[in-house]
Length: 97
Image (cartoon, rainbow, N blue to C red; front, side):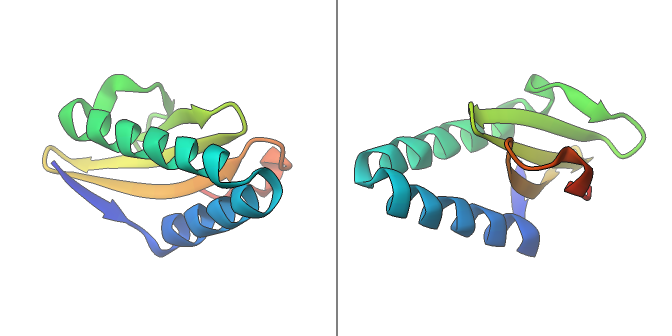
């Protein structure tokens, strides 16, 4: 399964990593990075493992850690697009999928 990082996913991932490094330190950041690797590995093996939140666009949500969720789209049987890493404490009305 091919995993595509959209520009928004790259940006939001970097912002969350920067925040974790600044506010919580190396260990919390390392734990987050390990969890992201684990989630992506699971997605590559079973893209439908996490709940669908938008059936028409085939968008799923995975809670990576309590504070951050990953939104992704199953594009085809061979491709998944990572859409964004969303801080769950943000206003959900700002989430553009």
